[in-house]
Amino acid sequence: MSGHSVSTALNRIVDRLEIRSTEGRRPRIHDFRHNFATQTMARFFREPETFPASPSMARLSTYLGHTSIFYTQYYLHPDFNLMQEASEKFGFSE
Image 1 (tube, rainbow, N blue to C red):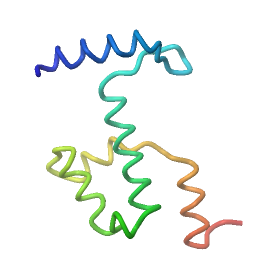
Image 2 (cartoon, rainbow, N blue to C red; image 1 turned 90 degrees about the vertical axis):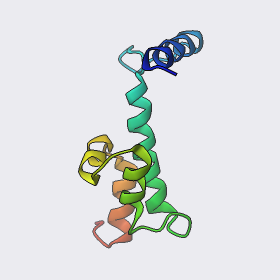
Image 3 (cartoon, rainbow, N blue to C red; image 1 turned 180 degrees about the vertical axis):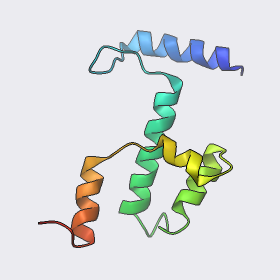
């Protein structure tokens, strides 16, 4: 499928389901990609038996088609619940 075809199909789905951000904006294909990357990293952290922690960023980077983990880091957004969990896990909570 071409990028245009994917975008058109996504826009139809978004319109039909009336999906909007809290600001009223329609999601873009890259919004789903960013969310996927962030949620996958959260799973790496929460389920180390399923997703070993050490190669997780490299695995995600490869899956997303990036040549470097530095490009993948751009896709990750703060997950404040995950940050709190990490603080507690590593003894940095109050």
